[in-house]
Length: 405
Image (tube, rainbow, N blue to C red; front, top):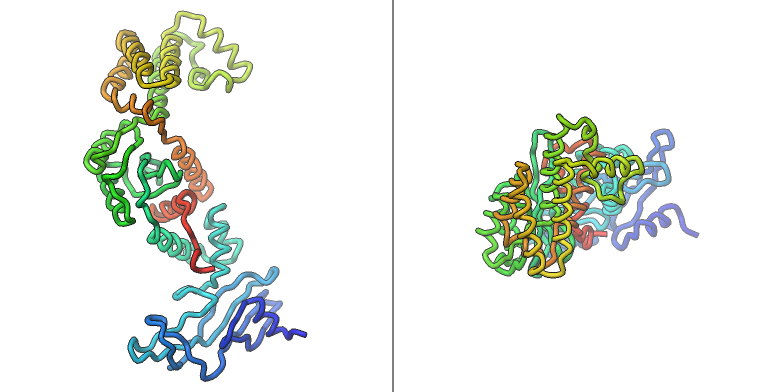
């Protein structure tokens, strides 16, 4: 029959020379304390070179462990320090925790799993720890996992930005469109961010010259950065961003016209949504307004024409449709739509490249939604580094704890 000590040795998977010396349970404090020792005279590997060495002395340490039912659990040990003839005196590595941590590996694994699903502050309340201690754990594992990343097979990327803090501050995201994961995140949305990604790509065994396609919006900064860093890549203007610009132009026409047409007020969404997404009341209003000779209705038909271009079977058909739309836009006498026509002309080839490669930032836009949802639930993050770490945790598909638990 197992004693309490033997039972906990088995539960902790302790191996020689480690053993549980005693168990202390304090119901008033709501805590369980497990004291671990080692057999006298046992050698330990030097944490630097791995050579078996004698114990020089010991140091008292404490680690937070997984809860024992509703009670906090702690591991205590007088951890030996090895006396290596080559590397000197060092604290040995214990099997239940990583070096420098005050948590056990299993506790950290639980924290990482929870933080991937909820705000760090909420996890801190659940486990009864300060959130800054949990952030240190998350940063450690994310940085370790990213250091081991291999980008040598990355060929197709997408670039986008997402808001990070108040005051119009952004981070740029670089996404592997084949593996559907975030490769890199960096503060800012200027051309230098593309250079930062190119350096990070190289540092992880990737090659900027092997990038085939880059999908992005029409940001001059991104386009200049891509031209400078990815000389062999084909630039594809993202269709979702182009449709967004068209919707903005359409709404500008509506806002200008609503000063004369009262019914156009509060009708914004019936022009921006696709018809199946409208309510019955919205459909009735749309049918009424679309049958009038309104500038907004004409602009709406131009929007539908752009959607039809993106349904073209190939580049040749798409270019024919784009030519017709460009003529319509530039001769429409609607200033926002004329500006949209100039935008099409200025990025003509990059827009048409979509029909050769059929790549978008759709997956990255979905990731942006997850990031903003996490940011909203957390009521913001203390700093940009914390947000970037969460981006990697949520969307980086990192191999966390692969060598730990």
